[in-house]
Image (cartoon, rainbow, N blue to C red; front, side, top):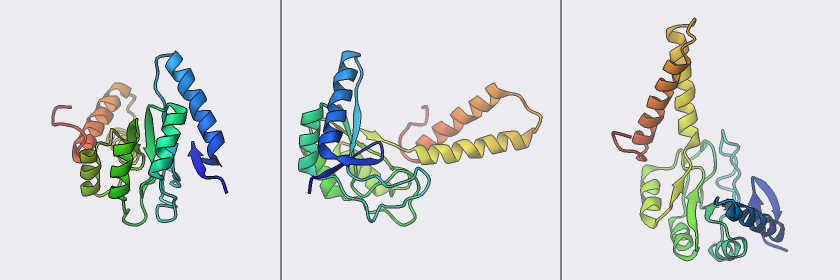
Length: 184
């Protein structure tokens, strides 16, 4: 049975995923851009964890081959993380992540960092993970701030004031999860 890879949440045969990744990388390089690819099984639905326990983890050897074949600049890996919210305590496979970071000739990204225990995030940072997706926390804060802003004055049309509050909230969220300093 051929190994499976994932492209934008859809399962495809590895050779199709590799061809798509290679095509994307070639096109991006010609335009001075970079490509982030996914390899592993990401079963989150952007709102709820539906497969952290059942998800297939990224194989380090396959990750090396995939990046070498596609030329991807950054690789999002599945090591117990999923996009969205976790229904149960996630179990990040730090040893697997460490091996991937050490072996793969590209930056490593973690999708589904929202909700990971702080110790796992710190370990991933120390291992050398280059990119962390924290969309769920940011969306929660954003929606909360929009509700509060509108509740304070239901007749408001102050979009610039709302934007200021949303930026402030995003900075506070980034600080709270350890991704920003007090001034930024």
